[in-house]
Amino acid sequence: MTIFLKILLVIFSIGLISIVLLQKGKSAGLSGAISGGAEHLFGKQKARGLELFLQRATVGLAAGFFILSMIVAYFVKV
Image (cartoon, rainbow, N blue to C red; front, side):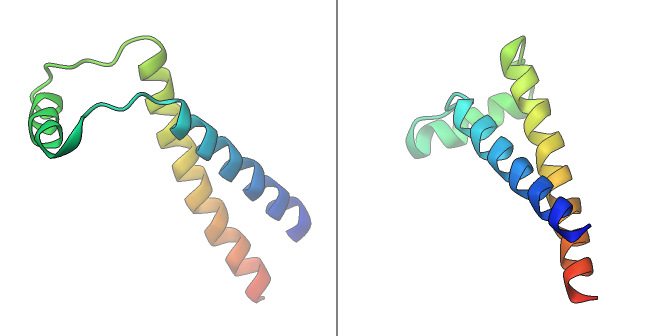
């Protein structure tokens, strides 16, 4: 059981790394971080298509990775 969970954790981590690397950078430097954050907050930049899919996949994989790492840590401790 623990071996299966560890393999699944490695798959989630590789998937999360690859999804994050596929995403486009949204800001350039400090000025881009300030103005880009404000534009994203007020909805001037809406994600569509592939960007929306990558964003949702990142959130899903990150949540799965977090939950799975907690489960693996529990089973390794017990």
